[in-house]
Image (cartoon, rainbow, N blue to C red; front, side, top):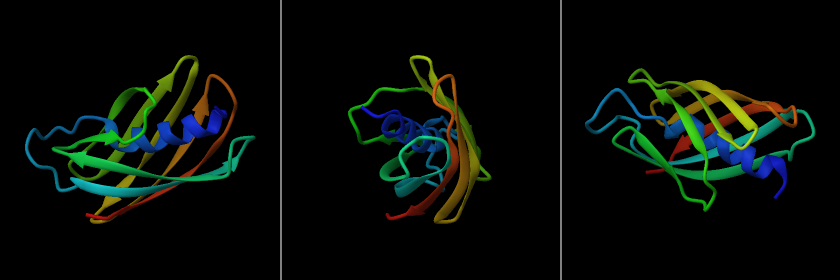
Amino acid sequence: MRVMSWLGAMAVAAAFLAPSAQAQTNKFDGTWSVEVVTEKGDCDRAYRYSVIVQNGRARYGGTERFDVNGQVRPNGSVSASISRGQDRANVSGQLVGATGRGTWTTAGGRSCSGYWNAEKRG
């Protein structure tokens, strides 16, 4: 598997996978379409993923396994890191209503960075 295929998935997942401070329904719950774009480095150019958020937590629909540490705050602020083996992606950004945008960078392997965009689909 190419490094960016799982790093892109990690960046997307990290944006949503962290627990929210709220235990009840989160205003960001729903299905999100997330585009991950590489701007610097030797990683694949772009990906699009579906992420489902329920009760402030998200799940990635793929078969990959990642270690996630971070959160989506009630104000929509996103900060997280996600790793697999020695590779890690750091993610930050903001969700507002039905859209979101942020940045990601890798650490511990191939050096890449870029941005992500998200749209709520349901």
